[in-house]
Image (tube, rainbow, N blue to C red; front, top):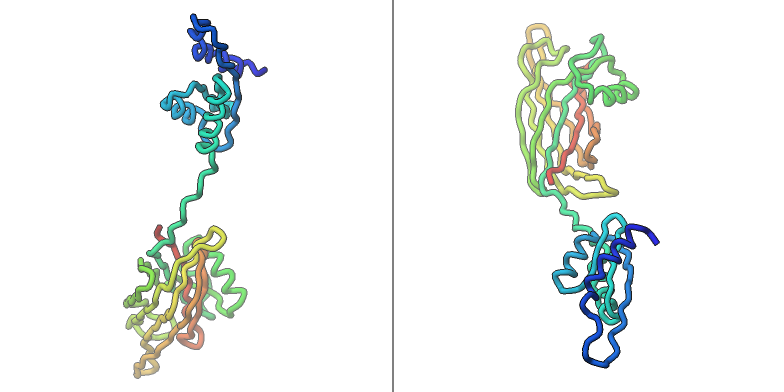
Length: 254
């Protein structure tokens, strides 16, 4: 017998001490020792609850076991209680987030400009993918937009972008972003944000000779984006040699 288990059983000698023969001639109740193994619950915690109920038990967390020394009917009672306490815990229901931080990176791609603009390390893999598909030599980050939105709400943002290299103008471009956060749900342990009616419109100014004019470029889409991923959702041509690309990242707020 395991030495530690033997010590536990000896510890129960007090349960029967003092129960020696009395003046009565009736046969004393038979005393047994029972080892009850646990699968889920803490042995010390179960033992503490049973002690509070007046039941003579000892528990050991290392062995994950309860030892009881008593009469058969009392042992049966302990076993029934231990079975209830040792039930497998039910997982807590997963609460889906009602808010989501949407981060939009506005990239400018050009066919003529050598080298790269200022790009964070996290955007470099995205740029490599873009270069493999589109005929643009370099990319630069024009703007980063971040907005927390509640599920079901529509968001509108407006601002300016620096002039495009081929515009021959010092007038900044204006943009308007509109989208609706449709839902945030979990799939295979990963959050997925559903974005509906996404529209990014840029109004740019150009100068040719002595004349100035403006031009609109727009990216429209509805899409899903998984947490931890950056997704290219579209591009729009601004000049013959330049385009804007929109990269979206979603961070659900639990």
